[in-house]
Amino acid sequence: MVNKQISEIKLLFPKKQYPIYRDYIDLLLTMVSRDDSGITQSDIEILSIALGDKTHELFQSVMSVDGVCEKLKTVFSLSIQLKIEILKWLFTTNKELTNKSNRAVVRLVISQYQVLLDEINAYEQQMILKNLEEKKIKEAAKKHQLRKEEAARNNQRINEIEAFKASCVDFEDFELYGIQKNSRVDKLLTQLRKKTITLEEFKWLDSVGFSTELVVQKYHLQLAHQHYQNWKQKSLPWELVNASAAYRKAEELTKIKKALDESYPFNIPKNEKKLKSALLTTYGGVCRDLKDYVNSIKLGLEAHKVTPLNFRPCTLLGAVYLSTGEFDLGHEWYGKAKERGFSQDAYDNDIKSVYFRASDEMKNRLKQNLVATGHKYKWL
Image (cartoon, rainbow, N blue to C red):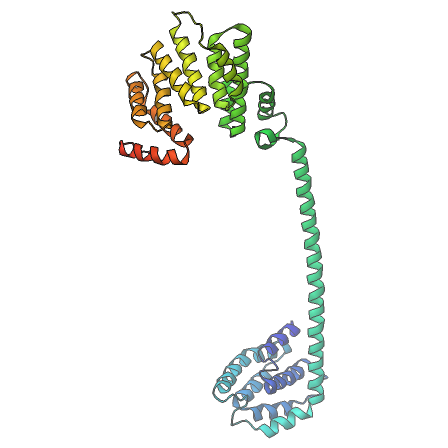
């Protein structure tokens, strides 16, 4: 407690800024706190008087109370007031002692105790160095402990990551990683690699955020393979239509194009007009995807002739003509599609699809045409 009080008082008078008053405070504190100090009360009173009235008042107040702790409390409280007075003088004169101070007496008394003051200063320097060393040791120990704790946390994280990895599987072909083993997602994606999954299962994957573009493409491709096999093995012509639609969504056209080429002109009974129109339309769609616009238009017109009231051939022709820059014909065929039941939402989606599939040059031309013809879309 005493040492703490002494340290707090000395902090008020740094040696570099207050060399004389620091010597006085050192002598006063040593006299008050040590019986064997060798400092006489009369010398300190003389020194107090020589420094000025405020210092002498401080000395008298200290000596009027009993007990070391009480004396130190008094020194501390009055030293604050004394420091304020010294600061005012320093600010105006840049001198530590006032004109009323007796400098000769101050120097004489302090010189009598210079050896003791040097010892005090040396001890304080020693304690500073000791405290710094202890602080360094504590900081080093703290850093070492922090490094140990961080290493332990890192090891724990590594173990957790390894444990997580061990319980997970990656589907790089779908760009999906960290899937929990034996989960429903794991089982469905594993199945999808080999064969199709149901529409409900596919929708569930999408609802839980596992339908990447590659998953969607694979789903349509596996569905296309299934429809294609049904067509080949069971001779179900509608399955060729379904296979064509799925292959187009999967953007895999080589196999279905060959099958359609070999099946054309589709020898379908006359009473199966809807089927023949669907085959012609999907065949035309494949040609459109391959930018074979001539055959796409030919097949679209043929399908329209077979089922003149069906809007699907009309949408195919509308899309092809817009894609080739024959905008008037494109809008005309889309108008016919609307007359035959093609919804506005489906029409808007079709226009958007045509626009984003077009080249940069065609996009600019189509955009100008759509704006000019009153089409207002946020994506334009």
